[in-house]
Length: 127
Image (cartoon, rainbow, N blue to C red; front, side, top):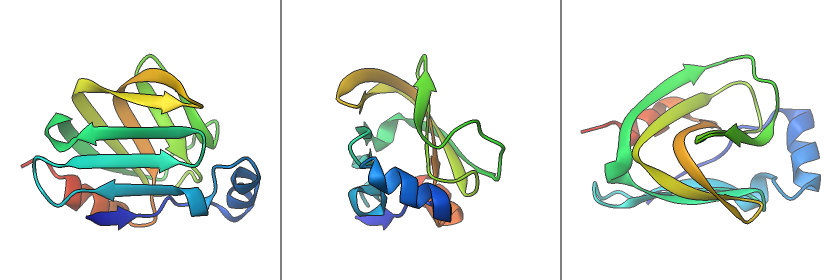
C-alpha cells in the first residue's frame, strides 16, 4: 500500500484543519495490486474507494488556477484540494461512488492536490 499526502497551502491547511479536512484526517492510499483499490479521504468532507481497474487515465495537471479549496464538484467531476499546485486528475470508467459530507455522489473525474504528483501518476499509470 502506497500512501500520498494532500498538498496544502499554509493558510489553507490551517483553515481546512479547523473544518475537519486537515492533514491528520486526509490521505490517498493506493493498493500495490493491479486489481486493488484506491482510497481517497479528505477529513470529514470526502471519501471514496475506487477499484484500480476503473482508472482510464491519470495526468499531472501541475499548477492551475482553481476557484476554491476543499471539496467541490458537480455532475461527477470533483476537485478535492488544499492547494492550486500538485494537481493530478484521474478519469474513471465506470464511475465510482463517493461521499461528500456523507451524501452519496457519482465520481467520473477526480482532481486532487498532492505533495508528490509525479509519484502518484506513476503509481496509477494505466497498464
